[in-house]
Image (cartoon, rainbow, N blue to C red; front, side, top):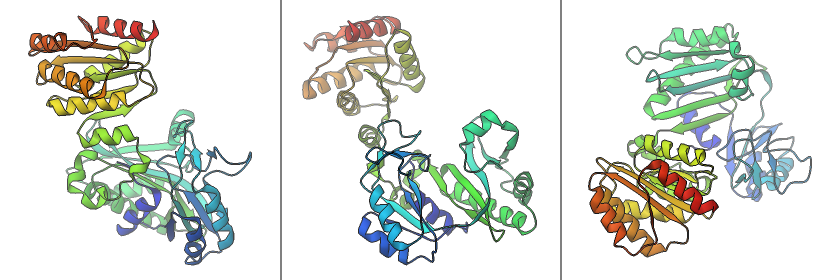
Length: 397
């Protein structure tokens, strides 16, 4: 789960991180009052969407050459004008894709005089099962671009969970960034607070880009992006309350309510599979056969008839789906349960596109019998390769 920048900064402020004072608004007429509550004389007006690259983005409805989603204002009136230009418009960045995201919130904060920009992040390193610290002198840039062009400018190391964060970790980062004097002490304290927030709030990612040195020589968090572990939200009620459902794909949001692992893609063949590995293999073989998957959908090993029915509804709600492939290898998940769910879903929502079903494993014969006696127009498949060929042929003719 992701949150907005203004929410991330409020959270980090509660852990002692140095951030600018700011106000979030949802209506343009609130912007002037919000800006007036800040010191000025420079204000930064930022579009709040769950995507990076806002400053380099562009609005679909904007005039040619108009500035992106991060703008400077030199008066409260100008701050209101800039907010009015962004609210209700669709911002397109390299992370949103061409469809962009609607701007429903604006964050107005005090401007900062910048001497140096740096990059700092805490991430879950799945290879070592530890928290990794990543830092770079190239703040303000995409870290992927830095890694590709100047990898020597990136410092990355993991923290032993048994020992936890230690001051020497902060000093190591500070020295790699060229910090001096009080800045080193500030980094030691800041990184310690960020590590504590990361652990206590079950974060998956905490990215500060840029972390700056101000004209007064102090560290400040200028931008922050935070993501949380969905599986831990049950014990993070205050974090879960920050969720902005308008920023999420409606199908993915609906899937999460039924504990389905679903990610929308751009293809034309909807997939319903049990097991993440099998789902990935199914997507791969669809591409191999000349088509594109419309989604990743893992119904899990303990899916019920109701969950399968809901999964089928989610797939069919995607207007890009021209065909559906159900690929089930029954272990913990029984084939007859899948079959019952598919039949119930088709009878409820109808079937407007070709459907190929491949079942194998526990109760496979019972599952096939349910499908075969349902009266549905279903194409049976013997194995995964056969299933992929049949659905691609049915869709592409």
